[in-house]
Length: 126
Image (tube, rainbow, N blue to C red; front, side, top):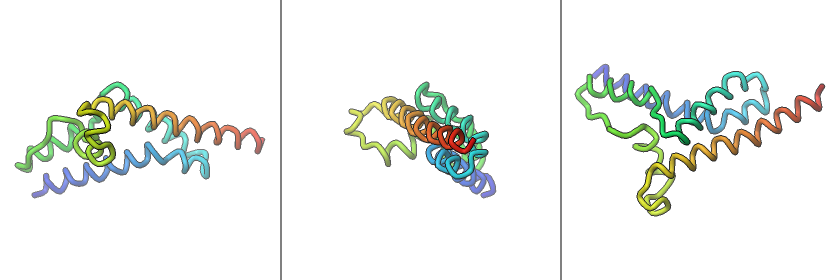
């Protein structure tokens, strides 16, 4: 039972990290020092999307589920939980890898705009 709870905690942490990757730049607009944590996070998250890496939290969750006698999954966390919800199968013609590439591009594009605004604000204040 403990391992299943820990696996669920890993999923919750994973979801929070994904939310931070996507939306943490908005926090940096308000508090620019957040960028010191957010920039490496969105670079990691975008890289996962573009290059097809698997996040270590996925391995941790699978390991905890295996120890808790629950079935893990062979794909990554995003492919298992996020892509089916966000990107319908028809949109990508059954190729989940293209969904990852789109997510990676969105992460980099959104954060490029946000950090352009952050740097602009910082220059105007100086």
